[in-house]
Amino acid sequence: MMRDMTRPIVIAANWKMNTTPADAAGLARTIASRTREPGVTRVICPPYVSLAAVRDALAGEDVGVGAQNVHHELAGAYTGEISVPMLAGLATWVILGHSERRAYFGETDELVGKKLDRAIAGGLRPIVCVGEVLADREAGRQEHVVDAQLKGALEGRDPAVLVAAGIVIAYEPVWAIGTGKNAFGADAAAMADAIRASLRSLGWGDGADATPVLYGGSVTSANIGEFLAEPGVDGALIGGASLKPDEMAGIAARAGITAQARGLAS
Ligand code: PEP
Image 1 (tube, rainbow, N blue to C red):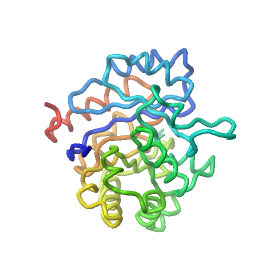
Image 2 (cartoon, rainbow, N blue to C red):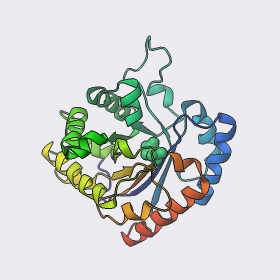
Image 3 (cartoon, protein in one colour):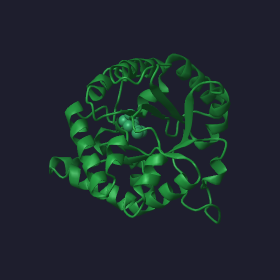
Image 4 (cartoon, protein in one colour):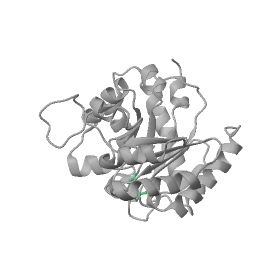
């Protein structure tokens, strides 16, 4: 089935290793009730152990539930890991290749590609994270680095399958994650163009234009407007601020304005 080629506005919350099952449900409900905006796709990614609580808390709300990672094998001797079949009924989205997974758990582009294959085969909608470290940006290598990350994870895969699965790319400069130092809107816009150029060079054709590109890195209600003002940027992956309902309400309100301006809010 071909997906609608209009790009949605996506606001995705990455709670990282925060919240317990006891407090996740209330937080999810509060955020859901304060972020309802026509044309804005919302996703909450709690820790694995809170997926069930968040799913139940969000019953009747149009908010996707996502995992923050998934293993690339279906089952086996992988102590402490979670596979795609285990997420059935708990999550419909998954974050892959987050820079914290790459930095602390040694995830490579090749591994991200394997996870992507499993996620898509299991019906999960992937948010694939890419982004350069500070030294790369200072050397002007950021687009080269991100191009290599995309090629490492996506090359050899059928673009039509990835687009039909609703793949989302999140551009998250590592130096901006959790640091309070956000990129400029223009940096995100330039990278969104570069990402779509990389996808085109992989043979994606129109699929490159149909693929949402999010910005992530110290997004708040105060700076989200700078990113959403860029036509090539389709939303945000939000870490620290996603635990704060006031912040999420402000971010969603701004996303709602963009959804309306882009003709998405019917
Ligand atoms: C993230 O976790 O993807 C992220 C961007 O974190 P923060 O918003 O805290 O920088």
